[in-house]
Length: 94
Image (cartoon, rainbow, N blue to C red; front, side, top):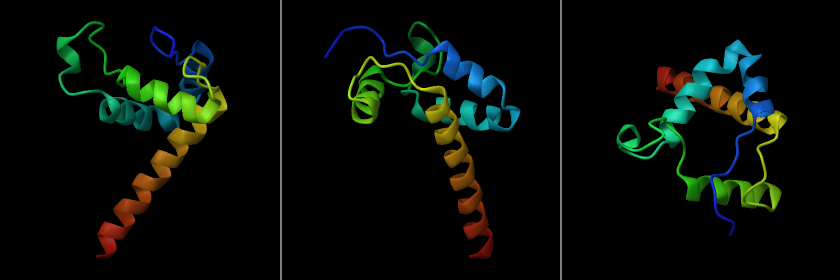
């Protein structure tokens, strides 16, 4: 496995920035995937653990250092939003 932090990619960030309906979901997922105590370690941002990101990128693209494809990030966030809504509906019915 290569060294360095896996890249999210400016194009992927721009793709999310163009979709305000996904902003809250993107922020929620960033905090959910960030390791405990992320605020105590540089770069002081809620970034996912490097090992987790390498694993996810390796399983999706076959390369742990592959930049996230914009459409894949948007699709993932839309799925997260949809799943969260479904959970809320199920809880409301119970």
